[in-house]
Length: 163
Image (tube, rainbow, N blue to C red; front, side, top):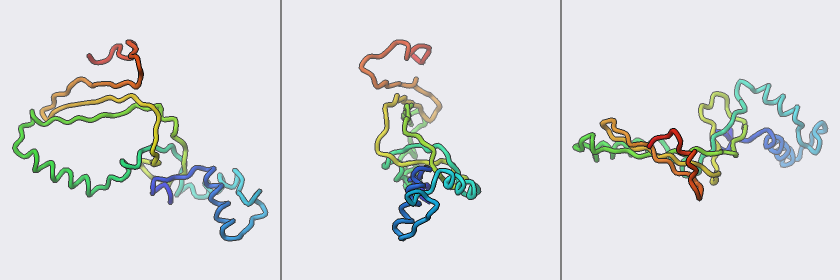
């Protein structure tokens, strides 16, 4: 299934996929207009296979984030354990950032039923607000740092927020 490779298809693409398969195999289905199934046929197909397929909103991620595999993560933590062996917790700081995006590209796509995190790999995204966090192994946390994509900062954006 294409969604397992992070390239899910939506209902429109399913119409086109069926048409392409029929044309490449030299078959013609008289019930289909231009050899492409109608909306009712696709919905009927999804209904018949609802135990295996579902239509859900996908989360867009970039290609370089999709390439991370479990052995890479394990290798990182193995090296980290050795690197921080004698370092006191007050000196171990971690920094991370997250983006809040307008995310206009999310769409419903067909996935294998039960897929926990449906994703679609894209190389571009729209604007976002970045928020950075930093804390140490003792539990001390710095106030979040927010970066807005704008030429001028509006005071209302910072109202009631951290100092």
